[in-house]
Image 1 (tube, rainbow, N blue to C red):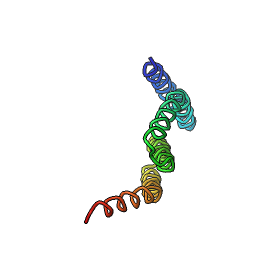
Image 2 (image 1 turned 180 degrees about the horizontal axis):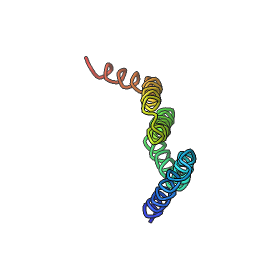
Image 3 (image 1 turned 90 degrees about the vertical axis):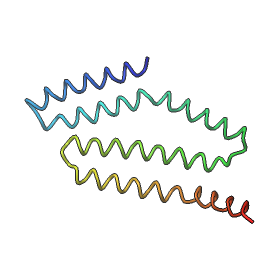
Length: 128
């Protein structure tokens, strides 16, 4: 089971971080970043499977593939933003974390405008 492996990496990283904080606290953040990267790499196969399944569904249902790409990019931005925010909070920089969070939300909103526009145009076509 993949989740057991992910939890295992997380717990091992936690133990390493606790030990590092006692002796070399400046290296604890590096251990946290490395653990996060390892976990992300562990789920890339699953993520690529999900992406290919969504592309197959989009092709079968004649959904605009551009919209699917936008949604996948938005999801990636949300995941990366959350990762960066967590790293900043772990290192005690809540102010920077909140700025990254706001920046990620603004980028997501700006990327979603074509989908919102298409949705509104569809609604206007339906209304008399």
